[in-house]
Length: 350
Image (tube, rainbow, N blue to C red; front, top):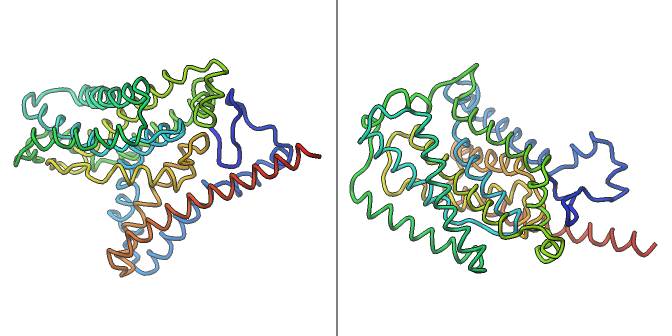
């Protein structure tokens, strides 16, 4: 796991930048993108709470603050891993919608089906759809944006054809499953706990395993990674399967959270997931960024969307602010990349 300030070498090790190493851990934490986003989230919450104290201090306000970003957080985890490998997955919203409707349909057909089994089915179904994306990208050598744009519409079309004018209502699903959307443990919503557990596991894998570092190496320099002997096709395939599985998990959480599922479930999640990852510091060109940053980006996007109406800002400006954040993040990444490249050239010439 690396930040925009620490680009890995081909083998995925941390950079041998003396200036970077000289910085204390505390300095590095305060200088990181993740800290900046966390501060931005805190400031938005503080300003909005001053305007309307119930935004944070009411029981529902605090719960919604934590639970609403959970689904996007899970989807953004998969999206971040795909982007780190220098690809993108635009089909995650459609995968989420298909999985959510599958969950509702299975509950209608088999009301006593165990809830944990439903989570496994959601993960497997999403992973299968991700495998289709990954196979087309990895073996077909077709740009991921083209492939996943096509599957976005294909999966959505299947969803619309399957769903028709029907929808799954909360009364069609067991109460134990729906409680997951509102239940809390020690004041923390269950959906948030599930999302945070997924975040910790993925962050640990990317930071501590060779496989995780290979994702960064492939995204940083695909040709060099192949020359080094890394299994680029396998890693790209794994990234898409993982992204699909996380979108599938998001579909299960969506069904538990909202209870009502129609053909439009998950619409727009793909762009929000890309936005969360990019704002969180995952470079759209691959090779850098962290899933923690992507998770914070998801929290920032959802918190902004909830806060701006409270502050009396029209809907148009809400979308404009999100767009400005994404553009700002891309520009910042480019500036940081050029600055780091210039520093490396200067050190080489000394």
